[in-house]
Image 1 (cartoon, rainbow, N blue to C red):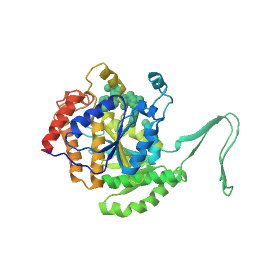
Image 2 (tube, rainbow, N blue to C red):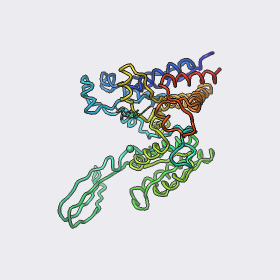
Image 3 (cartoon, rainbow, N blue to C red):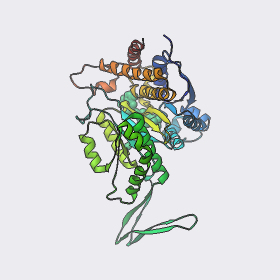
Image 4 (cartoon, helix red, strand yellow):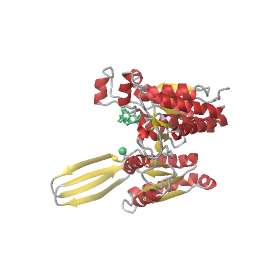
Length: 405
Ligand code: NAP
Ligand code: MG
């Protein structure tokens, strides 16, 4: 069989621990036998980040801007324990995802992979719900303090050139109190909005956006206004594709989401997205089945699994054990990236390959062959057998080869 050709390279970001092991297995068993893979490879493994003083992360992010599509393996974000585990680290390097996100000015979209044998806790959910979380500002970049005496808190803004000065009394209190100052930037909200509209078009899904602008009339009102304004640039495409942009209050959105059958993107402010993404992913099943894509306002996309490097499994792997680590989200990062590359380059075969790769994985799961984490989640009448990662990948590879033959 002739291998599928690529024209533009995919930006490939390798990572750490168990997911790095899976990465190699996925490439060897599911990609390289079928695709003449063209990637620009960046090793984001912790030790290589350390060796390059984290320049490799910056280079990988810039390559993503240049080529438009990347696939990323999970990576360790060093903390105190990791500094002890890896004494050669010269610095507690920043989270690679944080670095890449700020260079791409992107928004993260998280989507569960759904299978028939695992029913969401919310019974009427038939299709995945994608959460887009704004990842800048509000309470995550706020300042706060406590005060002990009666008094008044005033919030003041002074422009650098002195031309604009604004003051408002936050509150006058008669005893101890707690205070918080939060902000967001127009430019960040605008990028968030553009990424959301762009991704809705790319994936042909409706976009919902929710805030609490009845209470935070000015603050959340700005979010609503900027989204409305940016929608102007995308309205024609939305209408052509029969898509809807739907704004509603966060509490109304929550009620509608629970009653819906899914199949749309829900854009959330930073805090709402933090909370709702955990709720939605848990209700759909498992973190190991959650995919994630970072989309920049100009449409560059970096695909990855939402989970981490699965450290506990890695240490068992190092002891020579075969682990039953679920590769689904990492495989779907590859299929997502290859499909996008195919669409951008007009390579039908490549996009078809991505579809078939996903279909082969679904067939494998539907045949009851799955990693241990999923076996505990399937419906009682469904017969499933727990296999290790290698067996799962072999079973999927066999089905993929049959589909491509
Ligand atoms: P994790 O790697 O997501 O794993 C937490 C637990 O979830 C695992 O121990 C495992 O449970 C289960 N799990 C996650 N993915 C699984 C999979 N594919 N198959 C089967 N089970 C899976 O989170 P963590 O242990 O908190 O973090 C480990 C490292 O990952 C940290 O260094 C962190 O910095 C990094 N991290 C990276 C990213 C990223 O690059 N995007 C995201 C999050 C965390 P059992 O052990 O019970 O089987
Ligand atoms: Mg959270």
